[in-house]
Amino acid sequence: MTPEKRKTFLWVGAAIIVGILIGSVTTRMFARHFRGHHGGHRREMREGQRIALTDRIFAAVDADSSQRKLMKPIIEKTAARIDHLGGRRDNRHAALDSLRVKLSLILREDQRKKLGEFFSRKRKSSSKKVSSKSASFVEADYQTSL
Image (cartoon, rainbow, N blue to C red; front, side):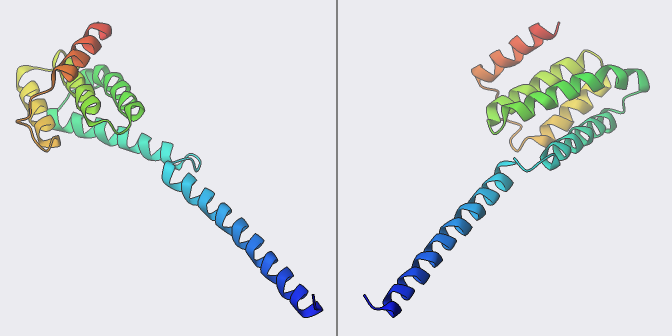
C-alpha cells in the first residue's frame, strides 16, 4: 500500500469516528430536550401551569378568601396527579371530574354552576359522557379524599 492510500484511509477513518461522536452527542442532547430531562425548566413550567389553573378556577367561580384557602390544596393535589398521569386523556378527565366533585362541596349553588361551565369549556366535547372506568376512578378518588 502506498503512503498516499494509507494517509487517505486514516483521514476517512478519522472522519467517520468524528461523525459518529457528533451524531451520538447530538442525539442525546435532543432526546433530553424533548423528553423534559433538561433541568428544572420543565418543573417550573408545570408549577406555572398549576398556579394559572388555580387562578383561573378562583376567577371563574368568584371564590372568597375562605373558599380559596380550602380550594387551593385540593387543586394543587389534583394538578400534581395530572402531571403524574401524563398523556392519558381519560385519566386526566377523571382527575378533573374528581376535582369538580371535591370543589362543589365547598362552593355555593351559583358557584357550582359557574364551575360546571368552566370545566365544560375546558373540554372539547362537553356532551361526551365519562366512561365507566373514569367514573369508577372519580368515585374511588372521592372516597379516599373523605
